[in-house]
Image (cartoon, rainbow, N blue to C red; front, side):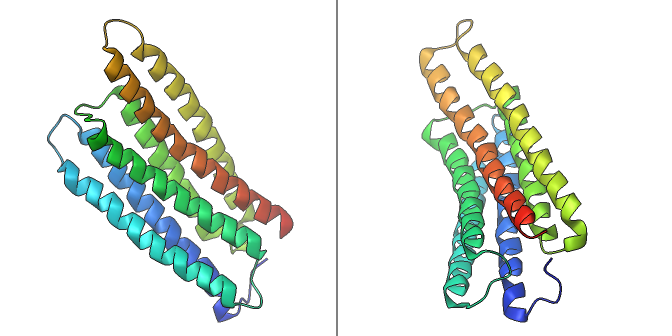
Length: 212
């Protein structure tokens, strides 16, 4: 599909790979943040800063990629799809930053089983998204890329189930309404990470379909 790419055309995939690397780094920092709540095992402000640093780095990569897109007469795949995938990777990181910032904004001092599971699912989906981006240029690995996209879809479905269970539990028992409301929003932000990963995976699937 993309063999014998010219150097400039290869650069598109190198930038997409770098962008998706930042997605994984942000997701892993967010996972450590959520798992560390209430345990004093990690410096929470430092982890929030780590996610923010990755977001800033990702913005620079996005800017370079869009500039290259505007300067290039030819592209290895549909230029609109390159732009869409770039924006969708950026949205994953933006939502991860929202999750990290919500810890301080909503004064969340302790984690829950469901929050930790959603964070783990988010990190898993981001890892598979990164692998899908890395294998995308290789025609011989198209099935592997497609399988990764389908796995992301399955992970998102699992996250939906976890979120519904978590929210239903918030309004049972004697939990305060304010805690229930802030945790509902927190769970929603976490699940949104999976939604954005699924969007990017669908774009990759479309790229595969158009280039096989």
